[in-house]
Image 1 (cartoon, rainbow, N blue to C red):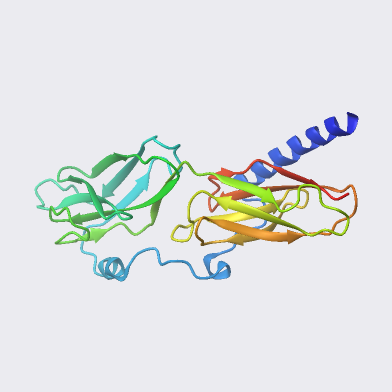
Image 2: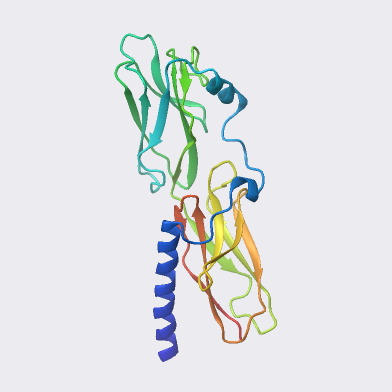
Length: 246
């Protein structure tokens, strides 16, 4: 009873420390894209070409919330460098994941629209200054938003082990599973050891999505605690996984 209480208190303190360190970026740095292997390019060559031939206009795009719960809206806000009134051009916002037109504004500096998805899903969004055109890429493009804007609804990550009560000579495979494929996105799925504060495994693409690592054998009666995190930045953390080798 005393050991169980001591273990629960320690685990709670350790887990809260990991969450705080992740939020502050104090754990081992998340690997860069170069270190993590090839990622899908943030935009296709058409967008790169548009970026290289910008006119006097420019436009930026941000999301009010990047990780809302399923069914909860996030507001996309596009800001132009010039007042659109009387220019003949529009600020247009598109869902680049589905190539769906969302909204056009031809007055003022701003254009905003609420977006909502159900379930666990990631969508990428772009803004343009162009003629009124509901096709992506629209005609008469004068500027396109330079940054990748991703919104992930219902983000979650789980963690599991191949053995729940490993013996002294056993090796355990620990697997982290994301509810969405992080491959096209800026996000990573990471597997952390709470005691060491070390990043044990990361991955950047997959179907499903999983990352795993083999741990052990370890000394008998040694408690280890593991968490999985979707980070860069952190948007989801799993419940802790406790393992003790007998």
